[in-house]
Length: 150
Image (cartoon, rainbow, N blue to C red):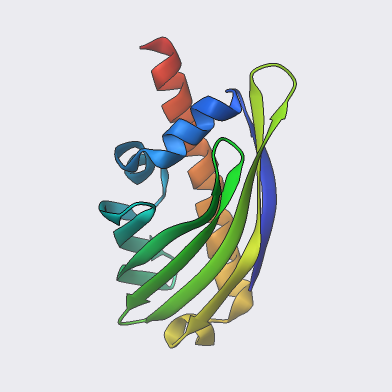
């Protein structure tokens, strides 16, 4: 399944970057993440719980940042495993300054699924990924507002 999109946030790239590199903030921003444990520089063990329509499962796996370009982007490699199937993804994330104090985050990549996740089809999983992406950006905007006002 192909994932692509972009979103503009009201913060400079350095601030967005700092949030994406902070495991505590990231665990509040990414929908479904219950815990992130740093295992090495740019590597994490991840724990997720997804409950959306027919997609319900607890996932554990590995999250790695590769090709890291400070304040500009990275490649996110994710491997998640659960009883309902596995998901492997490689997604290029870019941060681009736009206007004054705004950042466009763009992402482009592929997700490969197996098990029940794959059998649910791209239509169901595409809807789930779209909803989770919207939640991610909404959570990120709230986190940015919280840190701007505090």
